[in-house]
Image 1 (cartoon, helix red, strand yellow):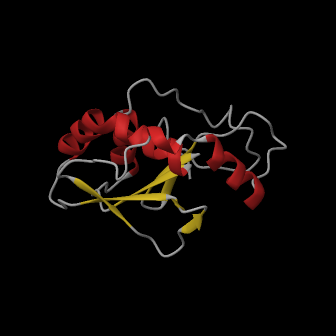
Image 2: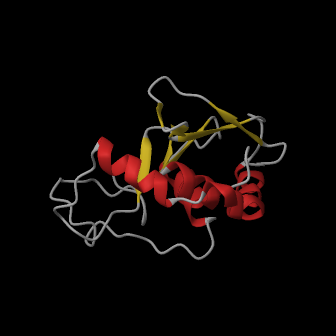
Image 3: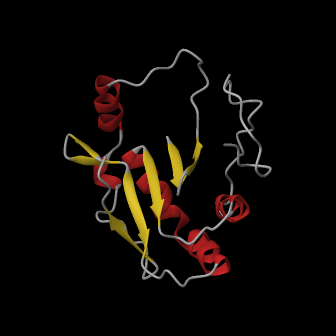
Length: 147
């Protein structure tokens, strides 16, 4: 599962290096989520709304990923960080239900802004590049963000 913002993404990786996603696994994972416990639609307050993206898929009636768009393009970073703190439970429910959340239009102009956005999620442990088991060469932009 992962969070994406602009062209930068932060992923929560499974521990096994041999883990591979497939349509069958996606359907099985979706069945695990108890949709009766998920509020539909998610309430993200007046700052954000559920949106769509061209490459979204629908599996067993569930759209993947959940796209959340900023409704106020003038919102500054402090306002956005406060929004994350206020709506973190709903954002985490959306992540659990949809497997990924794609954030659009939040005015994060730099890697430092995205790093601050990601750090707004209380209680989340960073997955360092060193622990990610990635063999790709990455450029470190901030403490949490690599490209």
